[in-house]
Length: 93
Image (cartoon, rainbow, N blue to C red; front, side, top):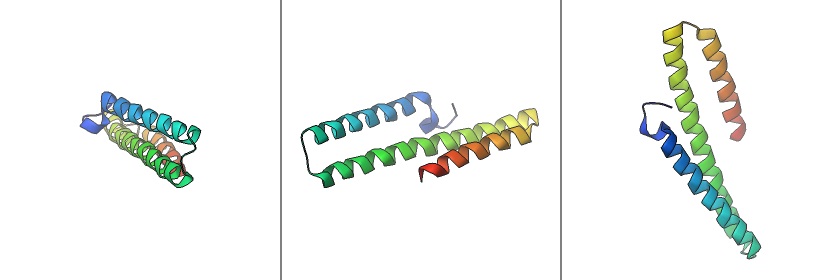
């Protein structure tokens, strides 16, 4: 993925696994009829974790885009790819 440790696939998979655990916990909270405010707190936590993964992926994409553009000289193609990624990321906010 990238040279930065937080961009490595195994670190991203660990983050996803934690989110799956969070979502499972939220599901159990709902089934156990826990107070809604407590469920919402956990939902916000999971949302933040997903946004962080999206941020990491966007950074990794930008890193790769610049490296690929420098090597290939195809800046238009790489910039368009980055624009699409930024557009999708902005929808999460």
